[in-house]
Image (cartoon, rainbow, N blue to C red; front, side, top):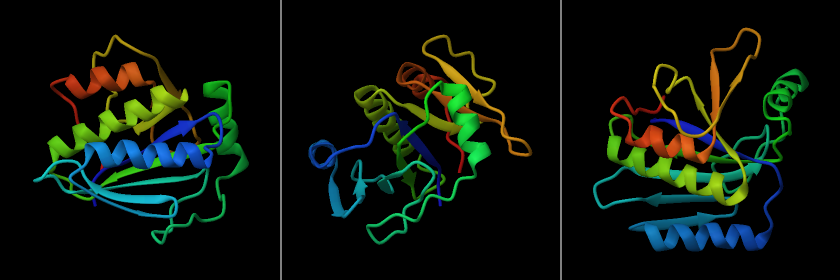
Length: 171
């Protein structure tokens, strides 16, 4: 499986928001299938299949159109709240199913930037951009005890990161 990252949002999404996601994806993909809170799609004719799921913060997609229970420990939620000054309510989880699909990774990152900008969220990208000289946007570092470094970035940062020569997503 290829890279996975999340767009963390400060408010829940309603049915109109979910329909807007569906419409936005339908207008930009070559193939699209929706099941409940999940979408499978292809961003370009030769790109790998990607997936998007909208789940409560701290939950994960089950792969059947539903989400798991929230299982994130309270201390981890606290780190998000301290770093962002707000606790995310929803996570848009984005996956590209191939490690070597750089063009697809860039398109998926652009999708993440779009949804973060539209809904006032941030993008969780792990440590992929640690050593990049990005000057636009904002970045927040999570300091979870015993966990690898985790960066949260805004849409402007992601836009610049996608154009950076060292761009990559973690898989």
